[in-house]
Image 1 (tube, rainbow, N blue to C red):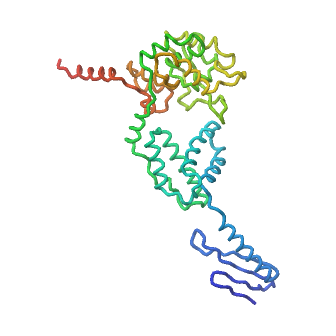
Image 2 (spheres, one colour; image 1 turned 60 degrees about the vertical axis):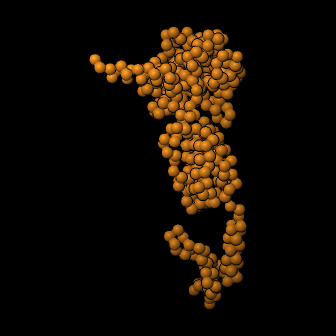
Image 3 (cartoon, rainbow, N blue to C red; image 1 turned 180 degrees about the vertical axis):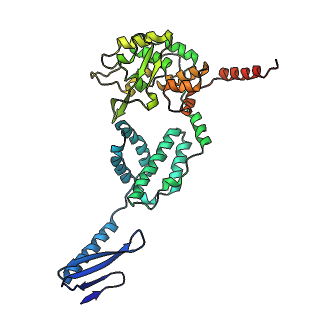
Length: 370
């Protein structure tokens, strides 16, 4: 005894053991084969009821609102946490916030490659850094990859967008270089800054090229007793708005910086006058000073001096530029600065007209007849 149903609806029939079985076609598998759902019960009415309940559940799923980019991005971010360091994970929030502002409540399945391309082009037109644009593109690829793997989208729209041409990005990087203090400004900073922890820290940044994060993680043991070297082996990182001590930016950032003889007294000052645990620390014993707090102190220290109101990181640019100006090879500068590659070092260089003119004069002399 059996009951056939309409085309595509399957059938209900009684088996040899007296049970009732119903089958229903529910689309196709990834291989293109029909997907058959089976139901078994003691009576025909129970099988029909199960089929009815299954159909109703499928209707409810069909009526569910589409997953938005914001919803999926937040889910991806939560799942990504175990895969990276805490400081890196915390830093991802800024890129993620930018992406959610761009794509927000758009259904993730409706976002097209042309929209991703338009977003990246807008960042370029707004003068965003090469690093920022690259981070946005990389994160979009990861978010859409995860959505594709979970069958929320048929394909990844971000992978169809090619990265910007190298010459465009190099031109962008040149236009977004942070500035360096001039020699006259360096003289002002050395002469007019106060002879205290802040003033001597700024002077030391100018002659060692340390990152602020590295300076704030220093202890007395990291500085040689005579101030001749500074051991860089850790850095302050901001995790969820709070400062923590962690490893430096990269493996190459772990280094020993030699301090010029003329300026070793600055390193000795920090070693002897800084905090007992960290040379720079907050009001809470043992807790590092925040990067933003140091930036505010730096801003206040130079506010009334006849120098441009640059940032603390520009001290690092100044150090690298001055080394290059005095003929130090790029490979050596990269090692002193703790850069992973020479391209990064090149972005920091600020060749002035005098330096270029002297280089041309050298070429002229080399070509003169003996």
